[in-house]
Amino acid sequence: MSDLEHWRYDPDGTKRLISSSRTKSSRAEMASALIQTYSALQLRAQTRLNKQQLGELQQLNSTSRDLLGEAKSHTQLQSQIEQNTKAALQVAKEQAEVSKSQLAETTKQTQLMEMENKRCRLRDEAADLRREQKDAEKAYFKQLRNAVHLLNKQALNASQSDFTNVEAILYFRDLHLGLAHISADDFDEFSDKEYFDRTENLILGGIREREEGLSEVEKSDLAKIIDIEAVDENDDIDLLMMRISDVQKERKKIQKIKKEIKNNQRVSDEKFDAFKSEINILEQQLSSSMKDYQELRSNR
Image 1 (cartoon, rainbow, N blue to C red):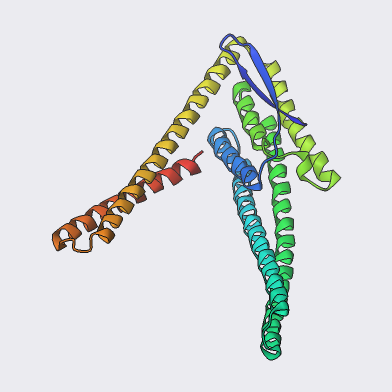
Image 2 (cartoon, helix red, strand yellow; image 1 turned 180 degrees about the horizontal axis):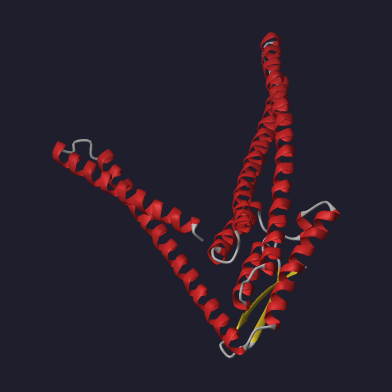
């Protein structure tokens, strides 16, 4: 499917559907969306899935975090390859300059030999990096296929569980959001593309099937739950922004004090101790704010 279905029920039971094109996402965004999906599913599934099904849900968490690790590895390798390419171009430029220089022939040949050795080392490093990148690509797409498979299994679990209609729709909705940053185009193999489409159709089919059985009261309940969860999510964002602001303010205070100490070489021992104590307090507050910030991010 080329479009994502964003929908909601109004309190009067009216279903409103808004379609928007799926945009290309980075690998890290794909993995982060899956991690958030796991967190949401875990809360909904505690009393409805059996031990085996909960174990399969835990696999989604592990796979999503492995996927995030592979995405970061890909970014790092790409950066290293770019640095290697720049270094090789710089050596080639220096070789050309030395060749045209008026240096003594012996000196010139010595420098050119050193540069050629450096160029060969960079060439070998580039070959190693490309091999690593190829292996990382294989690992990433293996984890991505696993993630889609686990979402497929969760959709089957939801279909076979004793979820109420409202619970099932919310569960399927979270599963669909897990696919929000992935598309069939992310896969090279036709079989993988087909499996992705079947998984998305399974999830959307589950939503439609449960919608048909919704009573007017359930439609109203579903609308209220979606509204409440939307408010909670906005609250989380506000808290994150507050923590970011705290961190920035505390860092600025520390930098200001350190700058004052550096610029005032004759500061008294008493004032220096006061500065040191204030920095320690600020660093503790900074550490606390960073911890809160990380916890809020991991829970999103």
